[in-house]
Length: 464
Image (cartoon, rainbow, N blue to C red):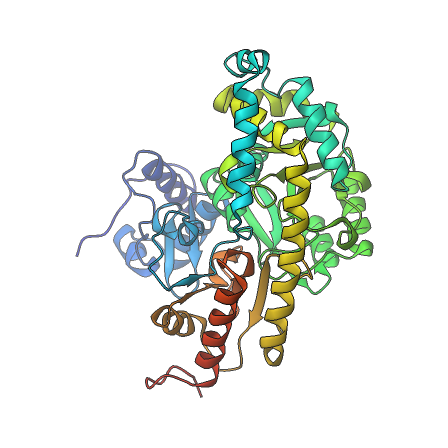
């Protein structure tokens, strides 16, 4: 079987020449996204170098963001089927009777479609709004829209000055925009060792090296981050301080203050992701208030109103407004004005408050139900959060559990897509409680999960 053998430059260190050849092969599509690099010993023999040289070359290529290593599997070109967002495609068909708890979605309710219909009907009757919706607008959004969105966020307990807002096409767009504006290929960023797969995917696409920082029940370990900064500070630290995705851990107040202090001392940016909404009483002090000149805050309508709207905001420090605006203009010129008009009409009406009040209560009931049914398994999740984290009993493997549950009509997510770097994934699963069609559907899924945990299938899927 043939393997990829690079053509190397005649001068310079061998490991650097191999790393440069990998980069060139990825850029020219000679190495396709998702393809596996040759085993190190085989490539070393083919090139007449030591295995250590290949190891160093692969590590350099990973540092530059071209490839990533998977423990026990090999080194792969970034992208392709290994993209961590791949398991979360919303377009995946769901068969009748299947309870899909793999996607972090707000609880379904006919009010969402009805409220959007009323907003669109109001727009259609306003000639001034329609004219504004078909015109080019400033990349950051018109002042009236930013003022309406800032006022809405203030009512949600997230006061922000409208002049610091930049309207985005959702939270994921805000993350990607921030990474591309503030970093370059080969840069280093840091995140919780388990974090939102969209951040991992965006970093891979931008050829940025994401470094894992340990976390516990109080969130990111700030002393571990301090040690990382002492070696080589990252350019940016990504956090979800109110509820880590997937574990639900909340960053303590002491650690928030420590993060703000480290950002000032080591001059890195903080990207604070607040898309996973929680009521004001369950949130801590926003990082954009503790370190306003070092923090960008991403918010979205996805988990509050509807994911299909694709409208969000970035709260941007004054020093970065021109840079982020230029990056957005280069990507899409502006956010579609009609969608922004629809959101602004929606949040200005009583529909938004009524929907969010119902959603908060509904998620609280679903969390209570899940904690009650799974209490023997030590689940964790915020009182009104949409996700639940479940460490598995000793000897139970997540992959086998998910396969058994799929056969029983329940779909969950393992820890693997949330892992930053190449560390082995913990044996745990995430349940998205909001995704179930109803509490009754959620209860059925929980019962099937408990049955699967308590009654091992005929095949030997529990290790001794």
